[in-house]
Length: 184
Image 1 (spheres, helix red, strand yellow):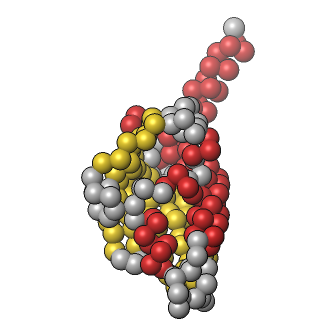
Image 2: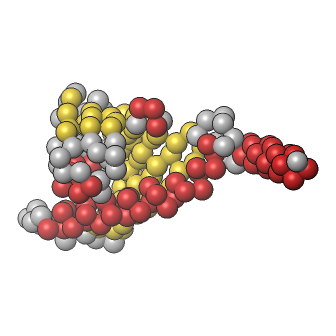
């Protein structure tokens, strides 16, 4: 009986310690990845500022090629929206372009339903004869101190997907013919 009581007290103390420790973890977490694409900013921006060709470079498309996509709003820029319903790996959600600053920045809102909301951003900057694309992700984990421990895994989980997506984006864009007179 003493052992059971000791184990119960230890378990309660451990949970309390984890909860208190979680309060000191960041509430807002994120990650970013980047790649240099051997194309000027204009065609890169055009690809990212619309969902029309999203699945050509999306790191998630291959996880569920049978996912259902719905597009609404304008074809490009602020208000362009893509919703999807997929398998357990892809999930369900909605993404909308909320900021479009030609040719350097695109901001999107992500809504994963009960799994939360987030913001993603593409920053485009000239680098050599190409364009550096930085894809960032940020989410507010809320006030729950136990949920904040999830922040330790954001960089690995989202970052790996972003690396695959950026590599595909680079491949797709660099395979397209350069405009006459353009470098690349």
